[in-house]
Image (cartoon, rainbow, N blue to C red; front, side):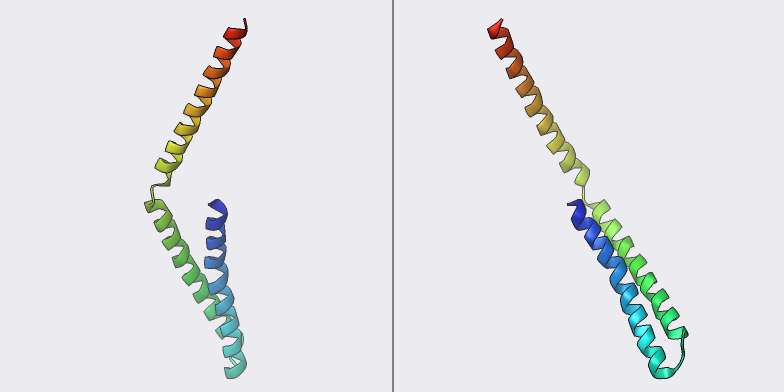
Length: 95
């Protein structure tokens, strides 16, 4: 799951910035305004990336992932305790 989130963050940051830089360069080539189109659209891509990251943070913070992880940890702990108790009983039988 963490890899998926990391991938989303990477795409959310990289795509708008790269697209802005590419469009800015093409604009500068057509209009002869170098480097202003490149700079302007790159910074616009950064702003879009920032908004995208803020939306991702909001979405993941609204989901209650801690509760599901905590419940899974509790279940694993209970299984582990049961396994330890079983081993202890087997050891007592052998003695």
